[in-house]
Image 1 (cartoon, rainbow, N blue to C red):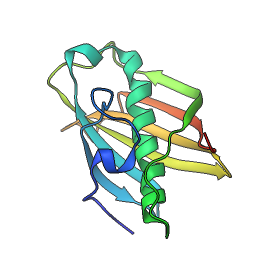
Image 2 (image 1 turned 45 degrees about the horizontal axis):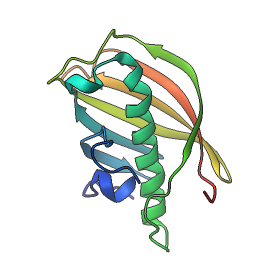
Image 3 (image 1 turned 60 degrees about the vertical axis):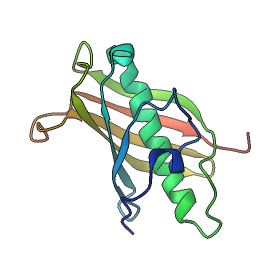
Length: 142
């Protein structure tokens, strides 16, 4: 199933001003992947924000699975448990520059899951990602 018409707020429990990703570019539930995009803003330019960009993209993928299920559940809150293999290949996100974030669900066990994530600059998809990480998250009954 491929769906690209969902909005960010349809898939994650975050609300402005804490929504950092701007758009859902593509969703492929068969390959367990989602690509989101954002335009970097001055207040979220530090490279450490990569973890939150990735976490919101992973949350959107989990929300897409929820929305596609029979019960059509709205995006549930989750907890970021950890980050492995974090590579920050940039000092900061350049304000006004457009970026893509991809999350691929690698593993799921009940309420826990792991997501391989990467961020790259728009128009430079053939280059290596700027940031990469594996995120582990928990979405039980909170």
